[in-house]
Length: 635
Ligand code: FAD
Ligand code: NAD
Image (cartoon, rainbow, N blue to C red; front, side, top):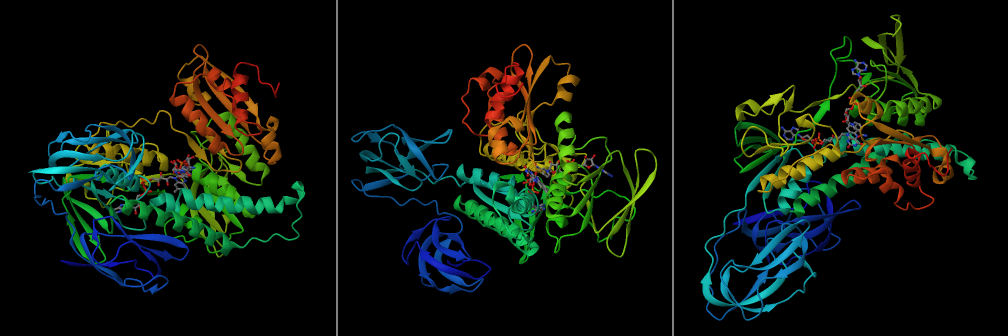
């Protein structure tokens, strides 16, 4: 059956063809590369079959939606194995590698040995898994090719067999996995399931990449990067660099944010496709325990896959405070990332992670920022001692804080909005700003999925899962922000790997007891493990080491002397219980502590590890030494 292939819905330019008319292709095989602006995209085959025609030569402009290739083939692989005459030499290819490549681990058969149809002849190590390569025909091994430890790519010819006329029965079809949601949970699950041999379809109603790439992690950090570059330029004279006039180009800031997100989104789409996955733009709803309908621009599609992974993420929670709904000066985090012009003033309701990161960015751009928080402290998950230091640093940068303050109502004004509040003292106070960012938490995206039709259990607005990411319905998994665990991109991705592995027959368990969390404020804040308040509440016998960044050479060089590292360790065993870093590069330096804690390390292990100089990381060793009251560079 003739099948048409298009490059993209938007105009592209042909880079080069990988195939030519007459070539046999499998689903997922690269056909050609096209340029989408400066980004190189792979156009992959969605069919098994033979290439009939290729259109457009190198450098040709391809209009959006134009057919570039015609394949005579089908969506499903034909399982039909053709018989071969005894004595025919058959090539053995490494097809089922569960990944793009692996290392030769062991040859089970040597030249001259007999082999049954489908009997494994080679073991290939693919990460922590072992894939076995076999020949569908029985016979005698003629030649084995790659040496032990050599790299083997998927599809490489690894051996040849002289056929004896016997052959395997029909191949079992690949398990079909549908992933709902293409965020860091869903796309990672899709890639992992593809690596393990599933036929994967990702259903995404918007752009791939989810909150993380479109309106979360990446755009906030792109904005913060611009803010940091701006401040560095403004303060460059301190480092001996005179910049006569520094000007903020807000359109440029927004363009950079969009460009970083787009580059990563295109990369993610390519990776899903390179692992054999298909991406369908549409909204999925359940019609039964294992059946879905997907509403697309072209109509309704139905799916009855073998396994379903729900990865629908979360959205900003908007509190039911009078005057908020319909007030266009009041925005959520998505609105705060996409502002057409830099506001002169901003009130942020909620001193959590989103509020703090965006407060730091906007204050650095020159906006007057005020934070209104109902609790008596900011960022409740962080260590209190360092949070108070962080608040002081932000106050020095002009951010104002009103803690224990209750928002009573909002009122739209000519230039923005008023926020009526009740202060800790009981007094009422009215704030006014051009924009009001409401960042008071997020809610799981489960409405509209019709989970009840599938009988999937929910609790307080989240999908209930066990540590294998299984819901109460067999073969249906849920991951990421929609399951009510820690709402982070890296936890969503970890859950995605676990769900995919379990869906493909493995037995993996999710454990978030050692999970680093980072706040990309200026300076950065990161932690792993427990904080001092938790150590006290749990009645633990603990000791603490602290080291100031002003005693760290690298931090001084970078003019980033604000901050501390604090390590909490068990008083008797010396095991590290928690690490808290406030300072430049905290979000990278924390990785060492996460690894140390995962391996059950003690402060002595940290002290006995040589840390390079001059680095921010060497402050970690000093903090560990401070636990033992023996820091070298601080008394
Ligand atoms: P999401 O990323 O939300 O993706 C879910 C996807 O599912 C969406 O694309 C959605 O369109 C799609 N979808 C939903 N329903 C359907 C349906 N019925 N059919 C089809 N598709 C559907 N985390 C960090 O670790 N580090 C950070 O620095 C960080 N910064 C953040 C900054 C901000 C401003 C915000 C808002 C969040 C931030 N996060 C950060 C959190 C992080 O973005 C989320 O934890 C993460 O994106 C969750 O991933 P997910 O795959 O579970 O869901
Ligand atoms: P959050 O839970 O971190 O903070 C919300 C804050 O709002 C809390 O301090 C809460 O006390 C306060 N609040 C609630 N209602 C209020 C009200 N009516 N008036 C005043 N204050 C009120 O939530 P968030 O900042 O919206 O972030 C949501 C989630 O997104 C985070 O929990 C995190 O999982 C994720 N996130 C992560 C990062 C990161 O990893 N760097 C960055 C941004 C977001």
